[in-house]
Amino acid sequence: MSRSGTTSLFHYGNTLSGVNANFNGSKPYGGAPVGANRKKTLPVGSFSPNRWNLYDMHGNVGEWCSDWYSEIYYGNSPKNNPRGPETGKFKVVRGGSFKDDGNSLRSANRMSYNPSIRLKSIGFRCAKDVE
Image (tube, rainbow, N blue to C red; front, top):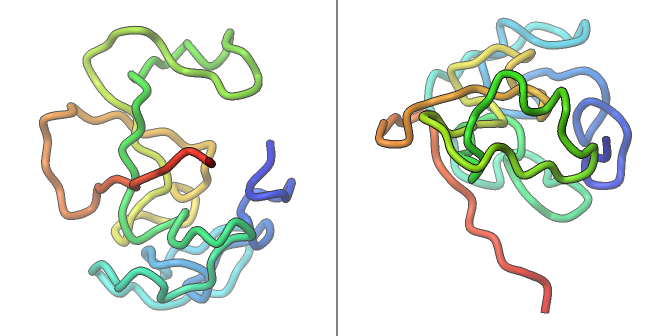
């Protein structure tokens, strides 16, 4: 799977420390050193962007996705750009937040939430098609 043109777990490599993203840095990923647990969101741009110039793809706030959540869908879905099931009760959240440990910030990690819930740790990203 590509992460902004890379094949690593994160767009900056296979480890995750508080230098790379805003999360519970006391629980890093992949042998990275223990770091700060800031316990709050930070302004966008506090960390380096990926190769596509997108900030905070990991950490700060989890990102609502348009996909409905299913525990089994991705096991039998198309490998490239699966759309998720047509209906469901919960929506997918990816990317992890300032509250989560490093493992939760992997883009392959999916969480499910009722779409009516409102939390400081979940947000969304505005996107525009290329013209």
